[in-house]
Structure formats: structure tokens, C-alpha cells
Length: 362
Image 1 (tube, one colour):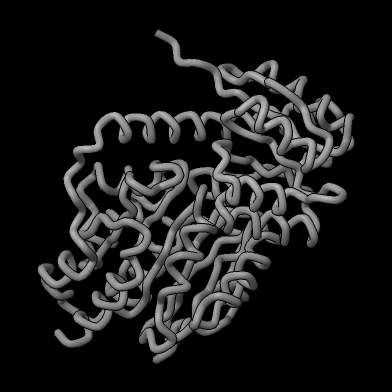
Image 2 (image 1 turned 30 degrees about the vertical axis):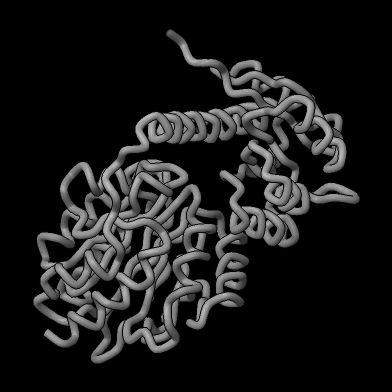
């Protein structure tokens, strides 16, 4: 039996853009537009009446912008999730990043080609990808709700204390994530202590303008120094480096220092920056003495890198299905028996700290 279509409320102050989304969503299977809203206040009224599964939510609107709508949805405990619709501008990046850190499902960029046909195709492809991921995530949530008898996950201290210490001292933590990543990073990085004795390198699949804003926002809530990657920057204790959108990030050793290099090498698995690319470089730079943390996201980026890291003697943590927004990236790690630990978001920070400390005592 076919499942019900995903019901969608289109929220945009531009009548032309509401029409554009209407046209392309008619071509997307299992998607059904149930209404339109011209601003944030109108959207909240429509949500109350229509109870849609999903919103396409314009980031920049008068009176009540996208982030304000999202916060009101959370405050009222309304059901819909949101795909933010953003322009590639500094202001659009700031509001979208805030929305993602507040729990928006994902975002798409408004096409800006001079060719209307190309714009429609780009918009359709982006929406189809995000809606498909949303449907998959919703199906998994429904399955978990039908089977609440899942085995209780051990607390981070229980899990890590019972594990053998790493053979050699961990020299770097590598975090990979995609859909749901900004909110996940907010939770994990805000709990890591200032005295963490190794650098943290992060690949989050986002465009360039957005990774810069993400680094700024995370720096405001973290005890660690969070920066966007720049070519030649040192990866040192107390620093978190976010890969620059649209670029590959690698780790290199120069004498006693670990340096980050940023380049235009090709995408891998359709993404740049790529988690696999970073992990491969880190294996060489620290002889495999690294911890990879794979969190929520679409696809399988990180799988081959983690396979190679394990072969080199490194360790891998993966996010549990329980609180992954999209269970693609961690699922690939877990199903291939690469995860030394499977943890919920709240347990990552203490698990990372314990792993680093214990490896350095061994």
C-alpha cells in the first residue's frame, strides 16, 4: 500500500516564487501542496488550520522572517518541519544558519541563473532531494514509535569506560555531518571543554558563505575557538576548524605542527568538502591516531575514510538512529561494523573527552 503524500505549506512573500514552487512540486512524486502563505503570521494561521507535514519557508520576509517563524513553531510545539529557502547572501546565510541551528530540517538555495528553465530544474531537483530525505526520516521515526521497546543505550561513561584505550595517543578529532548537522554541532561543540588537548576538524556539507557564518555562530557558544578553514592555518589544541564550503580540506604535518590545507580538488560522493577526503589526509598526517565522529546526514560520505582509518588503528564513533535527523551517514558506518561507539548527541562530548584522555594515558 502506498504511503500518504507529504503535505506541504509554501511560505514566501513573493507571489512569483510561490508560483514557481507550486509548479515544480507538481512534478515531485509523493508531495502535495495544501496551502500558501505570504508572510510569517499568515503561515502560523495556515499551520493551525492545515497541519502540514512540511514547510518551504522563505528566509527573508517582512515583519516576521523565517527564523522567527521557526522559533514560534517550536514555542507552540507545532508539528511541521521546515526546509528553509535562502538566497546566497550574507544576510540569507546568517538567518538560514540560525534556523538550522534551531532545528530546521534543511535548506535550499534560490536559483539565480539567467535561464528560467535551468532555474526550475535546479529548484525541482533540490526540493525533490530534500523531500525524499524528509520522507525517509519520517518513516524511520514512525517505525521507532511503533517499536518503543528498543534496548536502552548505555550512558557515555558506561560505554567508554568499558572500552580498551587506544594503542597510541589520539592527535585529532574529525567530525563529519550533513543534514541536521548545524543543530548537532551546536549540541556537541558547546559541551566540549576549553582544555581539550587535540584539535577538532569538521566537515559540514554547506556552501561557502554558510560555513563562515556557521563557524561564527558556533564560536559564540563554544569554549573552544571555532573558525572557518583558511589555507595554512594551524590545527592546534583548543581550536575547531570548519571546512570551507565549496573547497576540500586536508590535514598535513610540518615538523611538529599540524596544518590545514584548503584546495579545489574535485568533489567526492558529489560533495565538496568531503569527509572521506579529510579522513584520508588525517591518516597520513597522524599515522591513523585519530577519532572520527560521523553524525546525522544524507548519503555515505565518510564510509571509505572510516574503513581506512580503522585499518590504520584509528577509532570511529557514530550517531544513533534515535536522534539522527537523517540516518544516512551514520547508518553506513554502523551497518559496515565500523563504529566503536554508537551514541546519541548528548553523549558525544563526554565520550570524545574520555577517549582523548584515556588514549594519552595508555
